[in-house]
Length: 257
Ligand SMILES: Nc1ncnc2c1ncn2[C@@H]1O[C@H](COP(=O)(O)OP(=O)(O)OP(=O)(O)O)[C@@H](O)[C@H]1O
Ligand SMILES: [Mg+2]
Image (cartoon, rainbow, N blue to C red; front, side, top):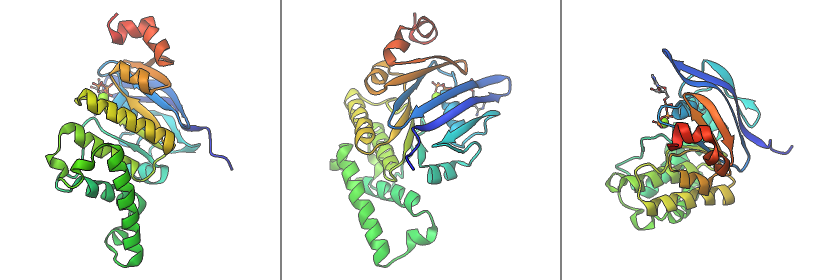
């Protein structure tokens, strides 16, 4: 059987917090191999959309399908494990005491071999497994340009470098879809280039599809084949980055006229 062409399909997603309609009847699909941008003003519902599709929050109404399987209201860890759909948060999270390589090995270990027994088991099979993860970790460390700090504690590195660790950790389990919440926020132009290159590499060479929340419109233009604009929880516009930028409503609501 061939894999479905649509990797993620969201239909009529709505989520309110009290009187605020954070996400309002949003439809969205991501094709296999696509890098889709999700943009819009502060408070327009982008992160809430992520929360409701990845099991962190329950949508009021709507459906979420991952490769044709309905996953609406599945808990976060089940989606990550069985669905191989991973997300980042606006706040970066790494294991600060562990070095960069250990951060990646642990990430691979948690997803590929989730039982406690397998994590702490000894013997040949366990050693081979960890050796395989370590090889994969070293490749990703080179790819993200972290080779020179591979054995430093993650907590001693800069915010931008920690973002790269988090991103490389997400690639460890070979996910099918990664959702990134403002991956470029607060990092310098050189590291932005590195993150863009890494996303493109993962997309091209590893076949990972992406949904990326991003305020930097140049990055969206560079990275995404298509973008969706949210405003006050609703989908305002959808198209190529060039079409979206040229749209009058988008200019008024988001890009400043
Ligand atoms: N857990 C929550 N409890 C109450 N209100 C919330 C919660 N999460 C989000 N909201 C509200 O929902 C709306 C959408 O917020 P959301 O964080 O999704 O926006 P965003 O597009 O990600 O914004 P930003 O670009 O600033 O990150 C806002 O009005 C916000 O205050
Ligand atoms: Mg947000």
